[in-house]
Image (cartoon, rainbow, N blue to C red; front, side, top):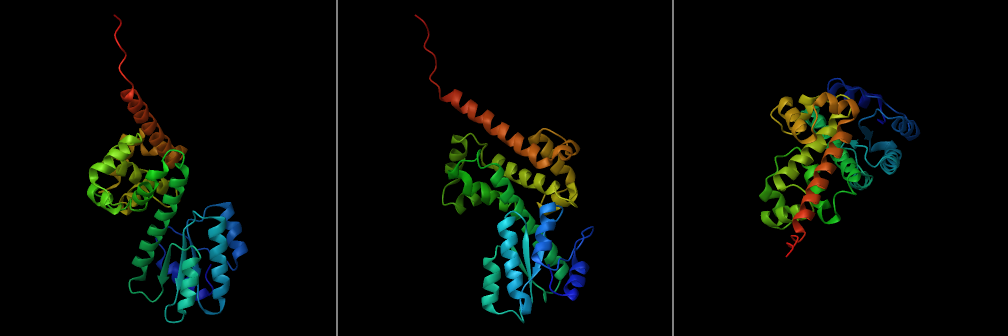
Length: 267
């Protein structure tokens, strides 16, 4: 929702290929469009004479669509420090400094990051009945960092435990060992991105640091049990979430059987 036509022109110049920049003149137009679907990300220009309107729009969008990626576009030479604080508190995923060099690259990176955080929120909400509260911080961290090749020691250290302790906690709740758990998290994020317009197998592979689309497709087939065409036909995320639930349910059932006492033999 840019405040000036010059901003619209600049956004169109740096937007990723195959994307469309749609200007909205007020928050009601934007909210109505979001309710209809099809908008992947919103950029709101903050600062200047329209700053209060921009912050109000950011807050209303965040309240109505908490999973929707929000980015603020600011001129750091003209915006006041308290105005930046208003923007930060309004629910944005990132702030673009429009005087940045290599703005096209920065914009693409910020869009990818904001979108990934938004789908991570979506996935965590979809699996809140499967992931116990004690593991939610680890699960959410792994989702938000799905574009990194997280090592088992590194993620354990983030939460102040040893690699073995993290392994044992996952297994105790019927989840796969740490490496498999992290792979599942990457594939859940990949599936959510594949459901969004404009994403291809190769583009998602690049965003999540897979060597190429073929490697990502093979990993999805191995874990989710279906090829990419079949996954996307019915919703890739829905299918991968279902496969993840089945995997956890099967592991939990095996864990329960193993914990039962062996039957005594008849005399």
